[in-house]
Length: 320
Image (cartoon, rainbow, N blue to C red; front, side, top):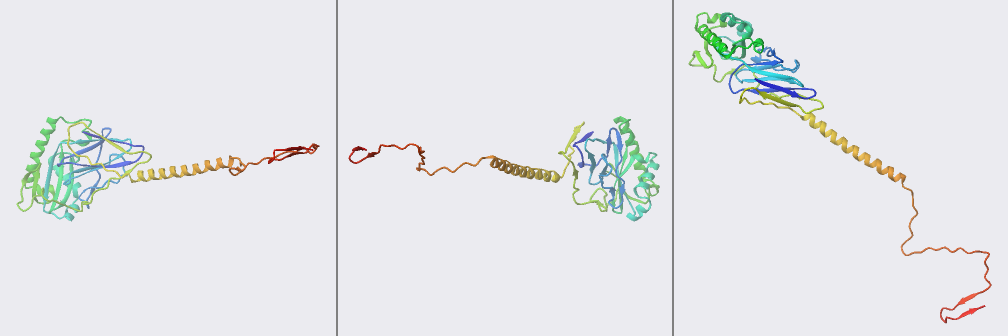
């Protein structure tokens, strides 16, 4: 079991998890099963995630073998592998005829009725041309009870062996065209061919109908925090996890904050300098270097009667 959580204040992230081989996986939140997105006949797979259904919105795309889900801030999500039979059948049909006859819903209903199991335990993962190839999984139990009442590994394996034998017999029976809706040209279960077509192998070079060929952009919308996705694996698993997020908005916010800080610093420095200049008193200009100014105050009431003459050359003093 893989556990995912998004540590953020707000926002959500689309997580893309590729798997090395085909399998079946179920998404849970607090033990509650979250079903896959509805089937999109134009894409030939489960519909693209919209991000409008909150935490747990998910889809699994067969052939390409990847799981996608939405996780929101503060949400903890679990992904459990489900024991299943991986099957595909190629039928002599056109795509228009297949969907006119009810598409994957009618297909799963007919196969479930023929095997005597509930339709919720059959999950279509891909439909593509050639004539019409349907890839589907038969689960060992209803995914809604996988957490609350899981089957033991021995019981699950025994049940799948029985279902596999029934399915192989059904594919080769004369009623196969009625159950599957059209004559079966080739089929395989768990990679083993049940009906072979020397001119075509549904497991080699499939041609999905309008499946996206460009990389899916993982969208992130987070406010006032940096998103952190944590994962916990309860089993040893080498499955790679590709989590990508666009932090362009955070970079722009950081740039704006830096510019605002710079502007505030410059304005504040200017204001402080202006205040200091306004408070500093004006001082008179200092005289030029080497110039000495003096001032003598004379008392007008003093009138000396003695004249003193000083001859600086003869050093004679005459007193009158």
